[in-house]
Image (tube, rainbow, N blue to C red; front, side, top):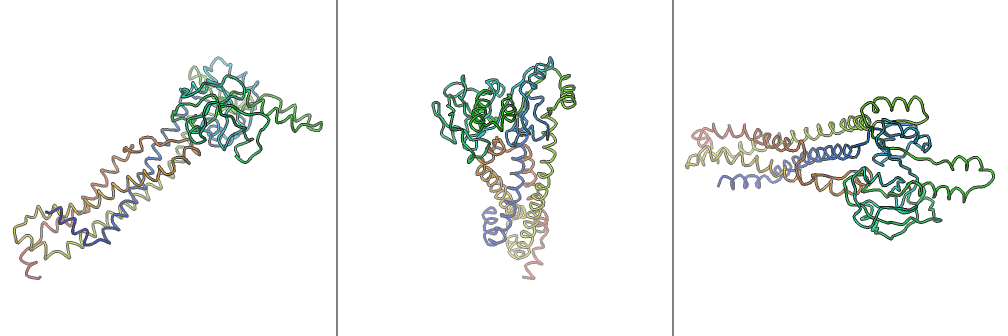
Length: 404
């Protein structure tokens, strides 16, 4: 009966109820969405640098090198000599080195020249078909294959650069030999071939545009170049010594993923914290609106409540109805806020995966921080009902009925 009474009271003040519910939903949804993004940002980015202690590339921004070579979401800092890089990757401190070469794309998807070792590093298996074994053969990531409807046996012409409207290399087609299983890593959104394919297709393209006046430039481009090398050390000593040695003694640059990603997290975290504070402010405002709504509602219903007490309805039951009003609003705001945050993130899944190499994990479960969000919101709801509830508990029946 008291629950039904609480519901009817909320319905009688439909505009106030709607405003309270909207404010709660928006603030909870904003904070929830930021918590999910932060959780997945850290989880995905940390997972993709596992087993990579250093990245070797052209001089420039270390963060740009990491974002381009590890996450494939930025332009490379340039190319380096394959022979020069090979001298360093044979160092006794290095356990594993995976060379990468960029330059072409297909429908905006990067084609990465590397080796089967890149697939092994991310522990990605072939779902259908087989791994490339010859030049101009490729394997496609799970998301790429799904998006472009690729299957083993398909062929395509690559485009120079990452612009889908760029110049096509129509002299040589790539053949898809396999589709990678979904792994939740950057490989889901890449096309992988061997290094020789990238070198040969650009060397051939250069020959087509070659004339006598470009002799010196041709000789330069004929040198085998790569974009980056992913390196894992055998021991901590290599991680301490080699980045400094390479940066000081060579024309190349060594960047440490752990350092650069921590720097990125700190920059990213500032924006997240500001938005969370805004969301918290809106949530507190919404809680205050709930309190004012309940308080004013009880002031208007003092005579009705006194009459209920006079016919034998206990203070406990009336108190329950007041708390129930607050809980109806709070729980409704929680449910719609948490659901809205997830639906919004789901709507941008494809764009996020393509642009930032990030998948939503644990989207339909509470992530770290959301448990505290739920508890905090429920406690704020009880707090908002506390003062109106005390007013109900201390109401003077005879005086209220006498004053009408």
